[in-house]
Amino acid sequence: MGVLVEYLDRVRREERRDGVDVEAFADRVRDRYLFALSGLSEAERAVVEEAVDGGYFEDDEAFRSVVDRIREHEGTDVTDSYGTWLLAYAGTEYLAYVEW
Image 1 (cartoon, rainbow, N blue to C red):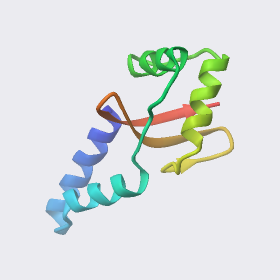
Image 2 (cartoon, rainbow, N blue to C red; image 1 turned 180 degrees about the horizontal axis):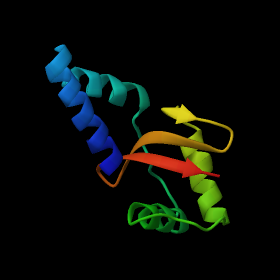
Image 3 (cartoon, rainbow, N blue to C red; image 1 turned 30 degrees about the vertical axis):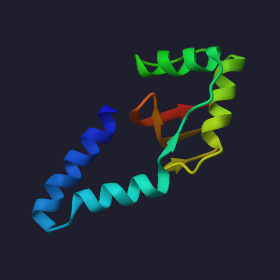
Image 4 (cartoon, rainbow, N blue to C red; image 1 turned 45 degrees about the vertical axis):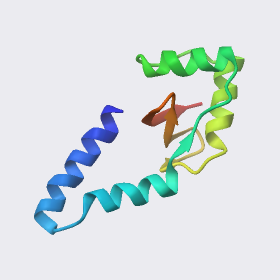
């Protein structure tokens, strides 16, 4: 979440300089990219909750399953081995960076 907040703060500073409506911009980003990460198994929830608390570094079945679920959605920046997605989990929005 910190990355998204920092990004939006930077956009807000640019808004003041350029006269851009940052709230409208943020709404457009959310409309295009935001999705709810829900319906997870207990093991998948454990992966996500550990990631939220600082990172998940095991290449196990639960991790691969979460990655597959995330990759079903459009990311903001995606390559063959990593990507960034805007997702909602447990009522909070996150800018999630994922490597596989």
